[in-house]
Length: 93
Image (cartoon, rainbow, N blue to C red; front, side, top):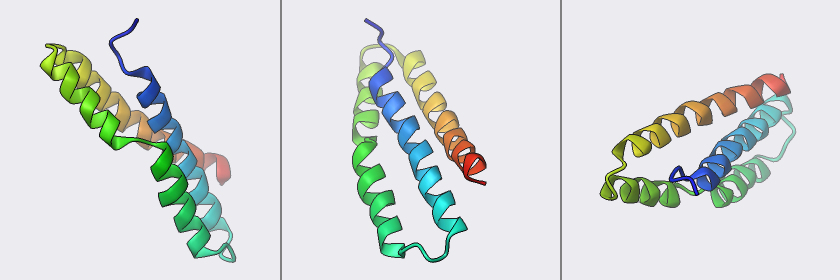
């Protein structure tokens, strides 16, 4: 079994992609209900992704002497999460 927290990583990156799709689609159509968009962003994406698990997993990796895995996890999560948002926006445009 891998020490890298793949499940949370993939959920968070896919959630970033999803929120990018939602925001880009809403930006293209001004008739979309703002409350619906907010519910999808905060409710759906916020409930799907999990920052608390991300934080706990990084703390545990550091406590277990695997700081390099934690740094990799943090960097990949940030980089690929932001890239997923941009990728989703490019698909919608």
